[in-house]
Image 1: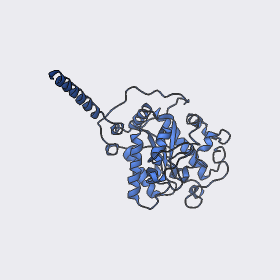
Image 2: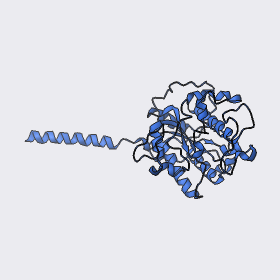
Image 3: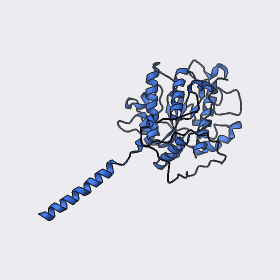
Image 4: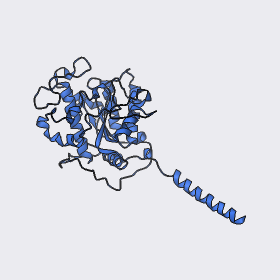
Length: 318
């Protein structure tokens, strides 16, 4: 009987030690990043579609929720109209996030589109996956990034849908399976796209602040960013073509989270009617992927500057 009690006692101690070790391990969602904003010059090496070398050790910092990290940023969110069209810097913390994402299975050669009808592959980016459709003209340096993300431009994202807004993309009521993303029960469009594509970068572009409620728009946009951060995905936020209230929120969150911004609004300003056909939709004429002949339509500018933004961020994180 004494031997039996001794055996049971030893087993109990072993189980307690195992349980203590398990509960003390941090989850992926709890990790955070150092809040240092660093301006990096564009890399000069040529990109090729090869494996990305990931450091075996990455910087660590105190465990706390992503949304409460105190950050500093030299940009003035109130001056967003004068921000550059293409991101000029990527913070060291975001580069760390990107590399952590590769370690947990995100694909360096994949990005996801997140947004509304303006992200439909009928007009947006898909032409870069067909060599007969695009002409980069003076922007031939972008060819390597086209090659790097080959197959992703025409991909039908589960997180893109006509009428989708920042709240809808996070609701299972709007989940819809696409040719390229088979969604599961209870997945949201956003979580389905993340699981199906395992992107390393997300290009986020919502053109409408639908009901004019800026508080609600900011709340759901913040939640969207947090989901991407928790999955170690680097977001690029786009300003809208026409909605300055929405753009002010995008700029505010970009500064808070140190996120690169694709300033579509500024890119469209030099165009006739600012590239807008009817108060919302972009103008379109000719081949919207032919950048060898001007004048450009609104869709020319959207497709070109989106690619330039992907290119700029990619060169800074690799």
